[in-house]
Length: 76
Image 1 (cartoon, helix red, strand yellow):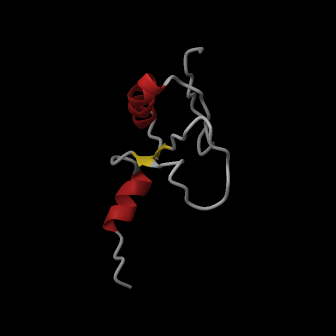
Image 2 (tube, helix red, strand yellow):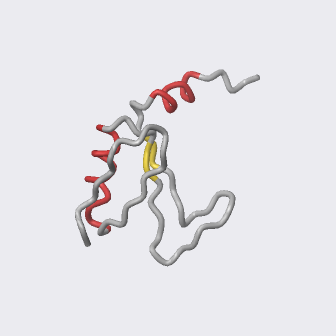
């Protein structure tokens, strides 16, 4: 597999195929870029709408959107 170049494309969704062992590196680099997080999936899974146990969002706790979500009053 080739090296991963996440790039900087504003709000764009950036896709990369990386070896399983490099997931932590990809997450760390995504956080450095200020991304909201990453969505790893099983290689054998295909896209389908809605939530899936095969696609899991890993959030960057320092991203502005995640901070706002944590501060939101959800009791309304």
